[in-house]
Image (cartoon, rainbow, N blue to C red; front, side, top):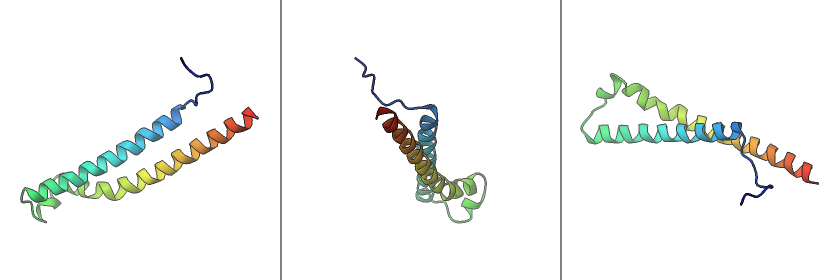
Length: 89
């Protein structure tokens, strides 16, 4: 059975949650790629060619972006809950 008072997750919250998860996931994958590349014997000069500069810079932008998106998700959730609390009174 479904509860008629169960909280609904709107589209903005869902999109923000997926964006946070994807930013963190891509940053972790970039960390792992650098670790695996270093373990495979790549040196400093090898990381400056091809797609490696992008992989090296991705966590520098991805993690702060994920934190900002997470804060935005919290704000959206708090606003929704406060509106629901006001309508229940």
